Each structure stands twice: as C-alpha cells, then as structure tokens.
Length: 173
Image (cartoon, rainbow, N blue to C red; front, side, top):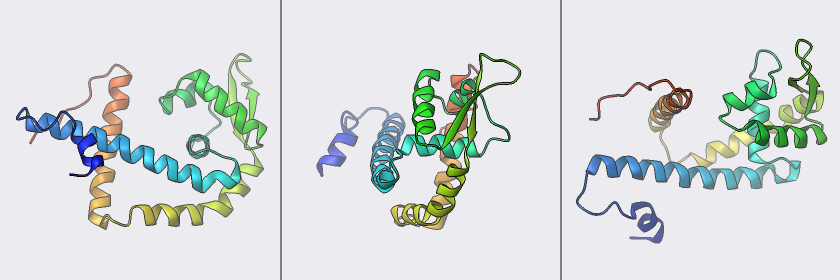
C-alpha cells in the first residue's frame, strides 16, 4: 500500500464499523483532494496575483442578484466576517471590488464588483475551465454527475446543520 493510502486509511483498518470507516475515508479523500485542487488553482492563478480563496469570493459575489453586505457574503461562504473582510480588503487593493457603505445602514458595508473584475474573468474563464476539465479527466461524465449530486447534497446538509436546522438523512445503505 502506498503512503497516501496508508495515511487515508490510518485507524480504519481494524474490524470495526465498515460503513463508518467508509465515511471517514470519504471525509479524508475530500480534504486531500481539496488541498491538492487548491494548490493547483493557486499555481494557475499565481500570475494574476489572486489566490484560490479570493477567486472563489469573486465568483460567489458575481452570482449574487445585488451587492451583498460583508455579513451576508460571509454567511453564504461559511466564513468568518473577519476573514472575509481581510479578503475583501485585498481584493479592493487589487481593484476587483469596491467596499461601500450600505445606503440603508451606514454601519454595513456592501461589496461591488468593478469593471476590472468583469474584464479579468472574461479573458480567464476559458483557460481555467479547460484546466479544471483536465484535472477531472479521470472521471467519466456519469461519475462527475454523481459526484456533483452527492457533494451538492452534502454541502446543503452541512449548511443546514451549521444554521441549526437538522439536515435530512438518507438511508445508510
């Protein structure tokens, strides 16, 4: 067994609950894959001066119907207000967003995308999407669809449980 598999299976090889072990292995694989994908995307974005986390904030911000407050965006990203504010300030320095007071509540700050943001992604998305396609080429179209459905379901359940709601459970088989 290679070192990667040994680490992923650490503590799971004993004859305990096989289903629980499979879920723990899933968790570890998600973390390991996420770290690898983040590293790859950071490398891909390096020439732009953006990090993967900053790019994700911009992409989520772009999908909002109106400029959200820092608090609203932090909640939707499952991120602390302080962490998002640091990212937003960096993005403002780089010219991708403008942080402006909310007209209704001067204490709240809203994030507005700039023209630079729109120009930047117009030229980047095609190449970045092609790279992501290469990274996931080991998966069939059916596997991609299944993973998207499963991970979307997991993400929704995690967000519900974070907000205090009881997430739905599926049959364990």
